[in-house]
Image (tube, rainbow, N blue to C red; front, side):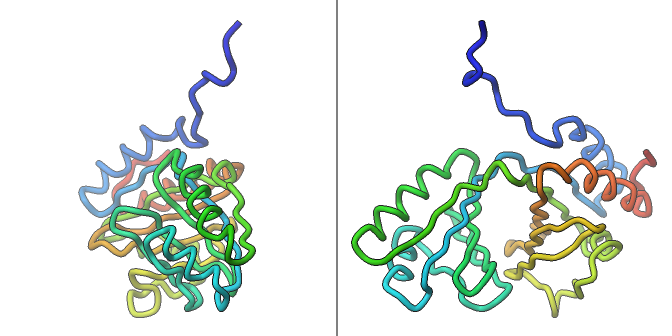
Length: 205
């Protein structure tokens, strides 16, 4: 009998990988669409004015952002997204959630309360990049996505095609956007993106 623990994880959009890649090729450089599966995601809560703030910053190697709707990207470490006055989402490489949770809990053990919850299984991440990425997302998002309003280093909990997402404008030039979506809605959102991408040369479904 097979060991269930040995079964490799299955991403919510594994079935759509070839279609996302085909849409990327067909857009002739205008778009890049892909799933970034299994990213580590930790919900972290603490008092930003208390001693836990410094302890978390030391543990992660970067200070949690305190300005609403902003993100801080570590060069080789995690990304921290501001979700609320005392709430952040840590996003990092697949499989690293245990490492980061251990670091945070160890750093805060003797300082102040901190709540760390592994939410990695709740969402998957879609990458939307390329010169027409903002135009594509604007078809279904009510946010002003102009670079002056939603430039690199911004994030928001918002709606995209009637689906609740966390939208992140990446820092690096040409890095595009992360769209963090609940796994149960991922297939629907991928279909919407593929349909909207036909305007930019992607093949029709």
